Length: 301
Image (cartoon, rainbow, N blue to C red; front, side, top):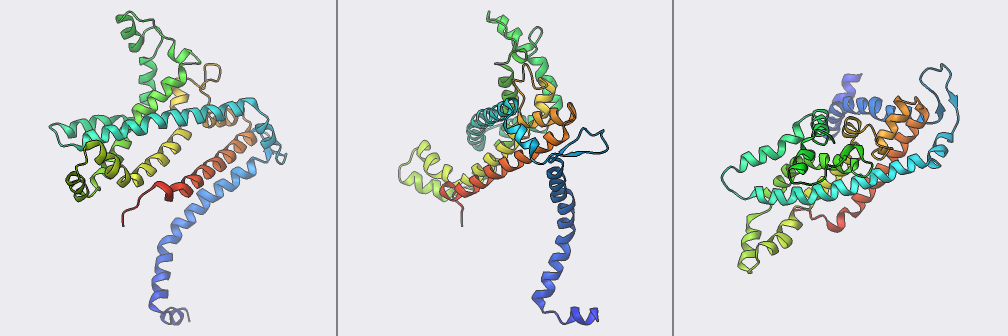
């Protein structure tokens, strides 16, 4: 009977069935490890549990209420937004500027491209350890050069005002090369006849960049901005290795706050509530990004 039922399907229905047979394994894995995990975290956020007690206590929305009235959590949100705005605000223009330079043909351009990309493929923990040596207040290389030029040494990672700056610099150093590669791919897809037409109209280099290059690479710019926001929110290794959230919680971001609550204080319910709020926050930002995309992103037909 099943054999007869399959033979009775139309060509389009058979293609649809074959397509679903390829997609279903991925959908199954996504349901179990994606949606299932989110549902379990949502359930944990309604409990008071320390991973040891065999009988977790159901507290409803008490964990969310505690977070929304927590000064330390609100400060973690503000630090994360500051980290996001400054790191993205520096990395995007810098990587675009370097990509435009590296897009020009000159001798050794491939070597420069490789040098800029190396920080991205280096392990984050190893990079953070190297930066902790560079910015060590007593024997670090940065303070050594400051003393050579008769400038006062700085506490860097020991200062609440400078520790976040060091973490932002590490982010810029690590991700600029990756964004350069993305921008180079966007620049290579700009049609050459557009530049030729602009030159015939008498446009100089800046006018060609502003009127031709920038509008044509807006899809790449949108993608880079989205990735930078995600990377900024999920930056954990840098904070963990360099500062452990200190000094005086000056570098405790949302993701590190989640780690502290879940795996140092064993407040599993609160950590899960932070994860849920972070998910909602990212969903809202992503929605606003895609809602505003049509107003400034130019898609080639």
